[in-house]
Image 1 (cartoon, rainbow, N blue to C red):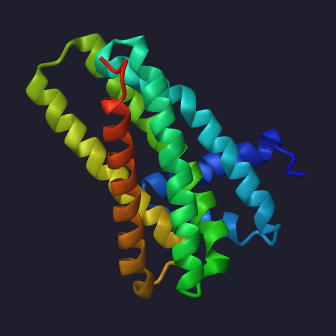
Image 2 (cartoon, rainbow, N blue to C red):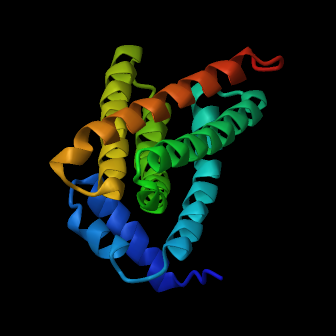
Length: 193
């Protein structure tokens, strides 16, 4: 049974923030801590659970309608599950099945860090009432950084070497594609708008 302590949570969040600013050694130390891989994976699911309220808040900030939050959360849950299953199957068939726990653990924690770092930007845009063009450009910068972080996290989970660049890129593109399809499906459901 995974026991979450204040120290372990602080260590994981610190490592996640270090990765967000491209300091991967902190993650390597965390992933190579000699602990059991299942425990790391179970703790990482907590990160996804913590990100759900932030996802709901970002949906409300984006369109100011509470009705769409259920759709957004459903889309994120389905996308998360689809990527977890897809990546496990792909990595197992590629002979890298042992790396899946590392990939999913780093990916889950980085998802939480993405939301924690994107939220202030969303709130700032809401409070300041900045012009649409500025929100668009800020959104593009944030999305670019989030995609890079997703790729970097997956690459570290696979093993940080040049040979993992392309597999990490393909898994990142799959993650994005799954997310877009799930979000588009959620928006097409009755009751969205």
